[in-house]
Length: 316
Image (cartoon, rainbow, N blue to C red; front, side, top):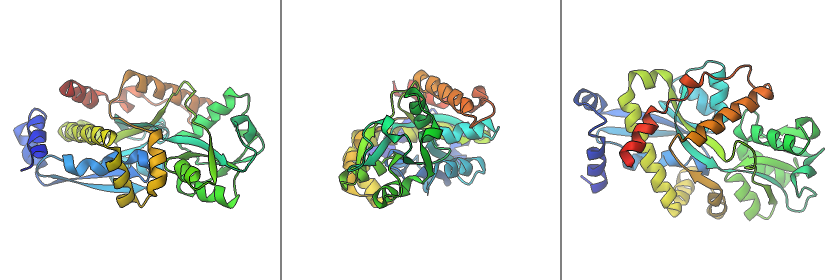
């Protein structure tokens, strides 16, 4: 047995009571993740899984797909944008945030040879935006801060993976993207960074670690174990950027040069801090003001800090 495995088993001894440990033997955990560099943490779970447990990482193209997979229990846990989680929770879907996943990871990008150099230059321009994404709320708020709104631009529906190609073809003048898209645009010479949209009250908020409500209630031991795995994988990937890049190249087929640029705009994390919770509430308020949701989520249900708080005490 490896040293890492022995250390993890020792650390989880207090998490699993004997019956739970027996029940965990042979457990295969299905984990949903996005095809993005800032969703790379789950791809490191395997090396930190407790004895007798395995993990299958299922990649998704969009945050909404990842959230829906958690709601329908197609996966046991999921990492996706906070916007998708709030949309689900506001509709009273049984999605629960049990941890953070990453901050940053987004950028407003324009053609390098184009006229868009500042955010105000997007007025009247074609801007690629993925509806229902975290990025959509950020760009709407940034436009408001500059005295504009979404009607002042030509909003074009484009998925994250297609944004760079659309910019290169000239289909759009700019986009609000997720890494590694901005990194690809910069390293290819096609695009330039207009700004990183982190100046709003939502800060650098981006992705969450979530589970089905029933999982948190009926199998808290599994949630606690996976929170520990999530923390260790997040810390490992944060401290080993070369390994994170290599994982993205091998598992997601991403461009190494672009990733070396993109990873500077990624902040992997795991803990539900007071700042993260406050920014999420602010985010939900913006969504309601923009009429993306009719009502606020029940944050007493949507946020479950128990597993994050317990893990933080253990790690201290």
